Image 1 (cartoon, rainbow, N blue to C red):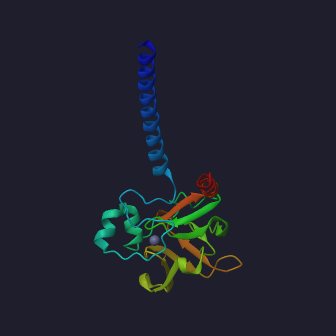
Image 2 (image 1 turned 180 degrees about the vertical axis):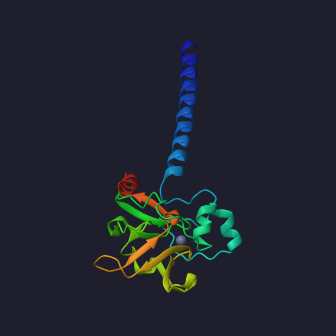
Image 3 (image 1 turned 90 degrees about the vertical axis):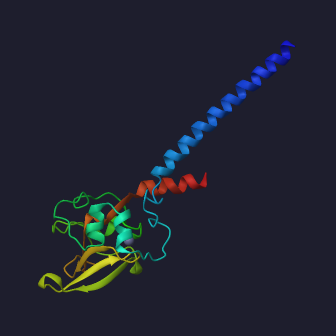
Length: 193
Ligand SMILES: [Zn+2]
């Protein structure tokens, strides 16, 4: 009888231990998923660093899902004040994504210090990552650059950049999401194990 009781007790202890382990595992998974780069942003169903399909949405829908500063730049073709972006003087290795939809835009090794007050790059990550549109507003002839996936306004491109392209992509920092190169490597290692 004593043995039976001991067995039952041991069993109960095991069950409660298991339950605790499961609970803490669930909590941990949720935490890391929330921080995982490339995952959809809370409240933004179109944000993805892996889905390259084009995004078409009404301005009203964009207004609902984007933070107001991002909406102002992306959808209303606004311009942030110069020297205000944290990416203006920033030289960490990694990738810059569209803050509205997660589309890959620029690599840090094409970023340069132009001194113009906005983050500047000499080449986009790929040909299709950006759309070019003539912009004749404010009495100037410029070329506007938009996100190739969601058509968010990014900034302008000028022909006074450094080699090898001679181009200067002058981009609003508000519309950029940065992901460190190291974190990307960690993500891949994590997937394998
Ligand atoms: Zn985009």
